[in-house]
Length: 255
Image (tube, rainbow, N blue to C red):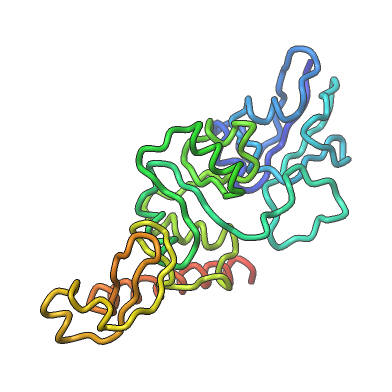
């Protein structure tokens, strides 16, 4: 049986070059669910928001028929398609993340911006999928196969090749600009920071820090102590540049 497929926008990132931005004929055995065909073509189902078959909206369970014309669209952020059938679950009430082992630097950046981000460098795929499902976290990964696990309902395949590029990508993809709360989480363990007096942590401070700083924060989970030294200034400038770059790119694309 043959059906014609056309994928739109960033979903083409997952296709072979000859199939990108083109309608192509796909031959299948029997009458498989459209979800199975989409994933067989290399596109994780968590990246899909809308499927039209012969102009009508369908969900993932739709069984393909001979000659079907299938159009597959990515997740919509700025277009209201509430009147149509969405194939992904309802958005999470709070955006929280879990990252695979290849995205450690991105995890640190997200924590720096105040986002609840689970990351361990020893998590296997099953553990990542379980955390994503059980704690209702968006799974960020570069592994398409991981996003095809049935447990994963909210996930995204990171395209960037450099941590800064990845951070800009995630800020834009999830429209996180209004939720940024810099330096409210521990970069090391993800715990929340609390303000503490200098007297409470005085004995734990290096000599130069005791002399030069008076404002301190401590992680509620691991007791790591933070102060606004030169490293803080570098991080602040880095985040300002990244946020400006991400927002300016959004403005240019929407102009």
